[in-house]
Length: 595
Image (cartoon, rainbow, N blue to C red; front, top):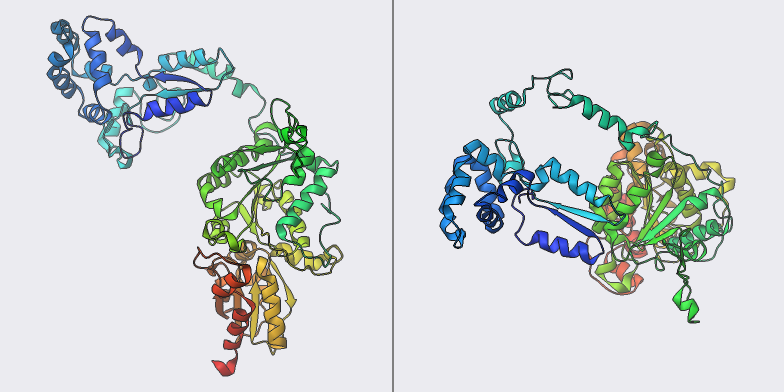
C-alpha cells in the first residue's frame, strides 16, 4: 500500500502489474491479507471489516497506520453504518471492541507481505510447478517502526529514545554480536535451534563455497590475423564484426564462451556473421523461416539450445541486466562466460541505470556502442551521441576505448577479453568500445612487430607525428576524426604534431593515479611548453580538454555540443567545427605571432 519512496502506490497499479505479468505468461500470486486478518474476516462482523479494507484508499490506510490504534477505531466505527449493507452493525462494533488499541493496530497492519506464514505458503504453492511466478505483496513502508506509514519516512530516522524503546520491546541489548545483543544473528528467536538447522539445510549453504575461483579462458595472441594492417577503407564497426566472424569460424574455447546480445540491432551493429555461425539461443530448435521460404537474407536466425546469441527486442536496459548476470557467471557458478552487448551508442543512456549497477557489482562484459557520434549523419539527432565518452570515463569498473583503425579494434578487443577475466587487484574490469560505421583509409603497418606501439595503444595513445622543439601546436584526436586530423596536420606542416588517443579513459585514470609519473605525462613530455593542444573528437569537447592540465599546456578543444542536424558527414563536421579546416584554423591561432 505504500511501497513507493515518497508517495503511496496508486490504487490501480497492482491490477495493471498483474495484467502485464499474466499477458506475459506468468502466474500471479497476490498477498493482501495476513493470517490474523483472515481469521478476523471469519468472525461475525468480519465481512464489514474486509469491505472497509478493500474500499480504503492507500493514502488513508498509510496515514492511519502512522496514527496507530485509536485512529483505526475512530475511522472504522465512523464508517460502520455505511458499510454494513443490512448486516448487523453491532457485530462489527463488537469485533472492533474486542481489541485494545495496540491489538487493533497489530490486526490492521497484518498485511500479506508482512505475514511470514502467508508468504511461506505462497512460496510452497509456487514451488509446485516450474512456471514463472510473481508475488504482489501488500506492505506498509517502515512496518513495525514508529514512523510506519508516514509518506515522509523515506528520509526520516529513529531518535535514540525510539531505538531504545524498540530494543526493549524486542528484548535486545545494545551492540555486540553474542547472546541477546542486537547484532547477534539469532537473538531472541523463538526457536533458535530450528532456525539454525533450517539455515544449515538451505541449498545455498550446502555447497562448499558460494564464491567460486575465477575461471581463466585463454585468449589467442591474434584474434583475427586477416583484420587490420592493410590500406583498404574500413570502419571500426566492420573491424569489430570481422574479429567476431574470425572467432566464430574458429574452434577456440574463447569463441565457445562468448555470448552476444543486442536490443533489436544485431545486423546493424556488426554481429551478423557471429550469429550466422553460432546461432540464436532458444530452448527449442526453430529453423529460419526465411531460409525455409527460399527468401534470400544475409542473416540466419536458426534457433537452438547451443545458440550463443540472445535477441531482446528494443530493450537496452534489459540487455545491460543480461550482461550483468552473464558477467557474474564465473564468480557465481564457476564457469566463465564472456558477454558482448551491442547497441546504438546514443542509447547507452537508456541503459545507464543497469550499466551503473552492473559495474557496481563488478560484472565483466564488453559493451559496444556503434555507430557513435554524429558520423551517422543523415539520420539526425535521434541517432547521434555526444556525452557517451564522458559516461564511459565516469563509470567505475569500466574502461572506455575509441579506436580509429581496424588493427586497434582487434588489439583493444583482445585486451578487453583479458581485462574481463583479470582480478580487480590487477586492473580487471569491463570494457566499452565506442565505434563507428564511417569507413576510413587504414595505415599499412604490422603492430605485432612493434611491441612499443602496442603498449602505447593500450596505455591510451601514441604519436603519428612526434613533437619537436619547433612545435607550436599539437592536434590530439580520437576515433572517427582521424582523416580530418591527419589532413589538418599535413596542411600545417612540421610545426604541428599529431597525437592519437585510443583511450581517453585509460589516460585520465593513469594521470589521476600517478600524476607526473603517468603515461599521459610521459606522452606530452616533449611538447614545448608554449605549444597549444588542439583536441578534437566526435563527441563532447570536454572529453579531451583535461589534457592541458597534465603538463600545463594551453588547450583549444573542438567537439560536438549540440545535436539534431541531418546531412552528410562533410557538412555536419563543418557545421560543428570539427572538420579539417576548423582544426587547422585552431592550430593557426596557436602560433606565437597570432597570440
